[in-house]
Length: 190
Image (cartoon, rainbow, N blue to C red):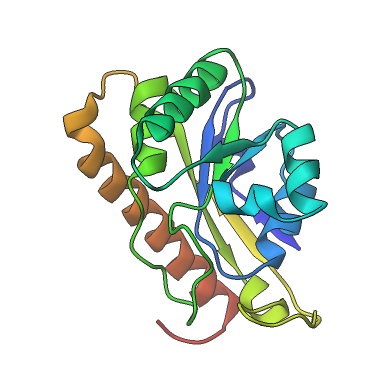
């Protein structure tokens, strides 16, 4: 396990952490090796999984509905208020694990939340977890993981019309750092 860039993120917060999603082991890696207290933001369907969903709800994790209903707007506003009040969250803006290891297009929800909460976004690139536990696999293999944090991206002056530009800035930062840790690790070329 290797974590880089912690010095780029000032203590305090709150923050909205956004990481690419390579494999199921991302969750254990980020939770176990980042020295920040955060809650997970996850799609509502995950909260209906027996035991896991109940535990997530009891731990105060944030459920978001992707359907774009009135409930979605209310949940987004509630989550933004919790973040403004000091709760940091972790989001996988791709929405799901990458099927092939490449960084997938981002969903808009996390960026709407960032704009509404006016909290800085910390881009995180993660490499290696796909090889340990790829999408669709139940087995866990040995391997190494690198996590690289980038400096926070300010959202204080962003409005909703800035959401796409913010999404592109975060996508660029994660992609740049993912390429960097891939090159440094001597793994597959991008």
